[in-house]
Amino acid sequence: MANKIDVKELLEAGVHFGHMTRKWDPNMAPYIYMERNGIHIINLYKTAAKIEEAGEAMKKIAASGRKILFVATKKQAKDIVSEKALACNMPYITERWPGGMLTNFVTIRKAVKKMATIDRMKKDGTFMTLSKKERLQVDRLRAKLEKNLGSISDMSRLPAALFVVDIKAEHIAIKEAQKLNIPVFAMVDTNSDPREVDYVIPSNDDASKSIDKILTLVTDAVKDGLANRTSDKEGDEATETVAAEVVETVAAPEVAAVVEEVAVAEAPVVEAAEETKTEE
Image (cartoon, rainbow, N blue to C red; front, top):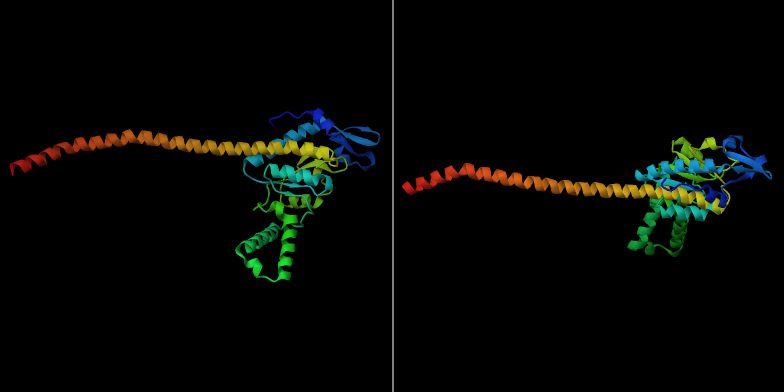
C-alpha cells in the first residue's frame, strides 16, 4: 500500500479491543497480544501487517477490473460499508444476505432484471395501464427488490472476492464463497476462527470507529487499483496514437519515394510516345 499504516491511529480507533476471554477462539492466539480486565487485546503490529497484505491483494483485483463484494449486515457497520463501497464503485450487501446469492447467482440476476423491467414499464407508460391494486403490488415488489438487491444491480457476474465484517454473523456468505473458491477478506475478532477466511485482518469488528478505520484503509487500496487501471488505459491509448502518427510519418516519405520512382520509370515511355505522335 502507498501509505504506511500508523499503529497509533489503529489504537485510537479501538481496533485492539477483542472479546471477553471466555468467548475466545484458540485459533486467534497468534494475533492476541495480552489479556486485560477479562478482555483480549489484539496485537496491532500484526493487524497493520495483515491490512497491508490484504490491501495489496485488493488493489490487484481492482486494477484487473473485477469486483469485490462488501458484506456487513450488522447495525453498526451498515452505513459505513455502504458509504465506503459506493465511494470506490463496488457492490455491497447491508441487508439480510440473500440465500444463494453466489451459489445461485443466475436466479439473483433474474430478480435484478425484474427490477429493471418494472422501471422500463414506468418509462414507457405500461405501468399506468395496470389497475390501482396491481400498481400498488408492483411498487411494493420494486421497493423490496431495491432494498435487498439494489446495491448489486450493476454486478453482472460473480465477484472476484468478498470483504466481510464479522465472519460469525456472515457465515452463510463465507460458506457460499468457499464452495465457489472465491477469496474472502475479513475483519476477524478474537471470538472467530481465522481459518475460514483467506485474508485475515485481526481487529475489533463491533465498534463503528474500528470498522470505519479498517474500511477506509482497504477502500483506499481499492481506489489506488482503480486509478492504476485508468492510467494504464490512458497510457495504452496514448501509445496507440503515437504509433499511428509514427507510421504516418514513416509512410509519407516512402510513398513519395515510390511515386518518384514510378515517375522516373515512366518518363522515357512518355517521351517516346510524344516523339511518335510528332513523326505522325
